[in-house]
Image (cartoon, rainbow, N blue to C red):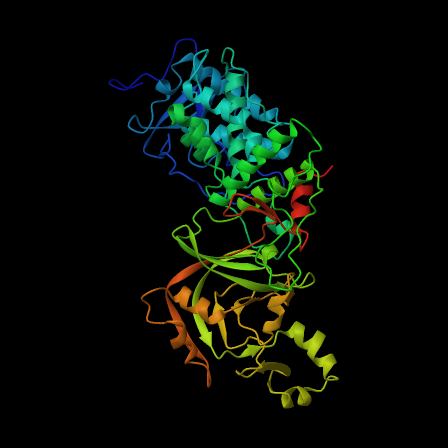
Amino acid sequence: MGSGGKSLWAANATFIVALGFFLAPAQAADLRAPFRAPLVQPPPPVVQQREATRLRVEPSDDGVFASPEEGFPLVRWTNSPTLVVLPDDSAFDVAEALITPDRRALADALDGWVGRAGDVERRKQRKAIAAAYVRRGFQPLWRDGERWRVEAEAVMRRIGEADEDGLDLRAYPSPPLDHASVAKEFELSEAVVAYAAQAAGARIDPQRLSRLIGARPPLPEANAILSAVGAAGARAGDVLQDFNPPHAGYRALRTKLAELRASRMADDDLRFAEARIAAARDDRSPPGGRRHSALPLNRSTGHVEAEIIANMERWRWLPRDLGNTRIEVNIPDFELSVVRDGAVAHRARVIVGKEKTPTPVFSDRMRFIIVNPYWNVPPSILNKEMLPKYGGNLAAIEQSGFQVTYRHGQAFVRQRPGERNALGRIKFMFPNNFSVYLHDTPSRGLFAAARRAFSHGCVRVDQPFRLAEVVLGPGSGWPEERVRRLIGGSERYINLAEPLPIHIEYFTARVDESGRLQLRDDLYGYSARVRAALGLDG
């Protein structure tokens, strides 16, 4: 080495920096390759590409381990003389990174640990964890020699309580709290990453359950998980738990799950009393109407427990920030709520899609309102319903109040604004890939039904002009009466001052304002599919 430079040699050790090929990122999910969005800002790279010093090193008996991530060469032994490129001293001092026995032992064991993964998906996850250690220069996360750090003890306790959040970490047990080792370091890191990934929603790809479920929760990277949790000190367990949904609805179900399990300790087949769980009644049913029936009261605690966990899982599909002011439509409840500052500011009955034409489940932003809307008849309704009804006669359809136009030889049908328009007098627009929206209806008598699944997928709203006033917001200058004065004539547009988050949800178990667990019919069968995917049935 040149004079003045730092020595890169440690006693009786030879090593190189191998600039490896780039390996695939981790896949923490069991059912899909996730799109990963880091939840924390990753640290700067350990190794940066700068002007380099060339160095020849001698062989040793071990094999080369390639870097799992771009830009982060991994220090390893090699079995042949190699010419390598090292960054300058200001970027990274390799000798400093491997000077401790702990770091050297960790680097030496990393390759074999990744190779011992039992399946492809677990191997990918281990590669991502290995990349996190490369970023750290092989510094242990959880150990000081043979002693566990306080972070390790905190996350071990949290992992041991994973089932309180409906998670299943049986395949990733945390190591016992005896003396620490390199192998146990890796076991704990793998369990931490698995916990965070499951908590964020990695176990199920919602779009595999149905193409009408638009949710795709972002999943955290292994490095982001380990960096956040490993630096949290005594709060490491809390930071790990925070990968679960932060929503009040999720936390309420978590509490009910704990209560249910406590009751089952006394009697595994305990039936729920109406005073404890209002599972079969909707107090808001109309006078003379059939009360909204949910799951029978004689369901076993095992079934209700599975249903709670399945609904907790669906909370993981929602954005972490639902919006301080927002619209929520819960399909199994046939109800819309406008939430402002954590309280329900408006509630309305809705009509949702039939079982054969389900309302999609997704989140978006409402942007404008249309008064006196046209109804552009979807091709599916035109071909399957209208043409058979009119004997295939487009002229008859036109005579009944529809407009028929032709483009490139194809007929397009739309209904003029008016009291007979299928969308009623007003619709609420949040442009989306499913082409659904909220709207009025001329068939208002259907709101008296308890099971209100009558639409082709859009959501029909009771008292839509009252909803318009609430959505436009106080101080907007658009009270209900002013919006109503626009009725008649051509389409009129009202833009919202700011886009308003809207979440079309599917919860068959929820906790109401009085703290009671409410269960609802699984209208589209999504809850059964979630239970099956999580292995909760049978």
